Image (cartoon, rainbow, N blue to C red; front, side, top):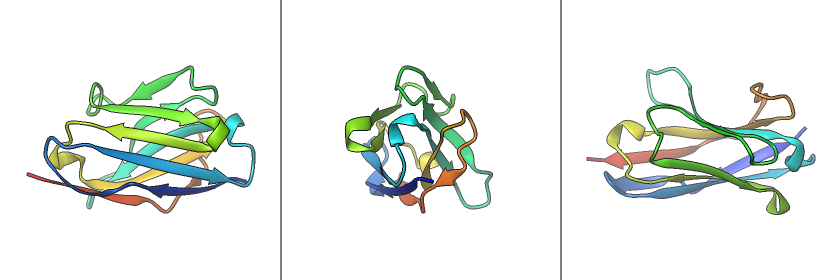
Length: 118
């Protein structure tokens, strides 16, 4: 099992940027696929982006394509979500998740709050 801890959230004005980090411990992070999810009050949890264990394959939700970039540094057991040109509708709790099985994401962190003011 892997443990995940997110950081980097905060309050930012529309148009600003934030970089979220997800540090993994426990098992071999480099063998885990990783994803970033978000959940806003009253809304369903949404997959924002995912990256394969090698970093060779990525996916983005249409709502963030061109603005967000997912990446990982397996040597540091850390994943990242660079968020640019943030919009008020990006306000949510952001979670990182991981799993050795693609698209399963059974292991999840506690989340970090991102608030974008207009």
